[in-house]
Image (cartoon, rainbow, N blue to C red; front, side, top):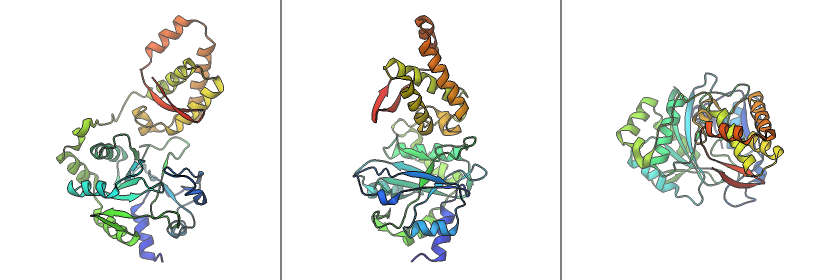
Length: 321
């Protein structure tokens, strides 16, 4: 039974953008092993008590857009998509390091590792510290939320699905000190774990996590043109691999929506490029494809920043160098 105190505590932990939320078709859970990929969508309506209660009671799952109305964050998440996963081992490391983060299983039984802040926090600083912890845990390629530190113009960015959706198809727990805590236990310890970004950064710094396994801080102000160059260069690379124009355009549209700081740091800071900008990039790629002047082609490619990316081509992952 979800009482009012539990509801309020849960809402106070997972603060984000209040005017929209993500959700998914929970009836599709359990149809495959490993990563669960149900149909997902966004609801452009406020996150109310009733919305959160429906989530906790298993009626409709909720995902939160991290950036609040002032583009600050109330919590951050490391998303580890590896199966199977030893949740207790991750929790034990965090406890040993005195890092105030809690481990819950995700809907796919990976791990969502949370930090909760006492007040609205700068997303750039939160993302930087979370990436350091992720690398120290041995998951340098794990996704970090917020995925954007500024809300993309005219868009909402990416949301993170919340734990403890009350469906019988998913058994959620918080893994702490070799125990598996239910919702009420999670809420109690999560409130106790709240920290400030200054405290969080200090703990990370004192443990030297920023240098663990070669962890690198993400640039805060990279060149503004980086996302455009990355996507344009990717389009040219796809063309050289033999892909048709329509497929290249489709891949660029998809990549623009899911690109992360590993592709270019500006994707984490600014999110996807706008629809108009992406259209210009796609058109520029098409113009280059129509240009038979190979010298001009080679010169332009050489002038771009070298990069690589993993993209989906006909449903299969390909690495483009």
